[in-house]
Image (tube, rainbow, N blue to C red; front, side, top):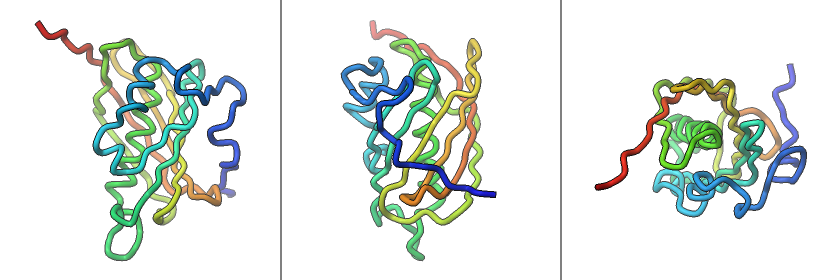
Length: 162
């Protein structure tokens, strides 16, 4: 079975994908403009979103600071990259003021991840009223699948400060 993907299309305008941050939804634009400290540490760069399809594409500029002593990206960092991809995908479905904490996360490592560009896709599998199901994949620069993941997220509306 072939576990490669054509990553040359990542971040390109096609189908419903939008590559211009100014055209992204406010919550996704906010995450892009001011990433979390963890996302910044992982080297996250959001490339394209397709709100209608519930898809996001991004690249992580993975530094050697993410590696274990054998030179591979440590598994927890791989899981965090997938968590970011899936969280941004489900974020496409949220209203302003909502967040989506992860309730459950499953990651399958398929090949060693190394420093450099690591491409990620996140997609909404199903969105319910209070829970969403998402999936994601990580690829190296050759398009080889490094890891896959699934996640369940809960929807929470933040209270306004009084």
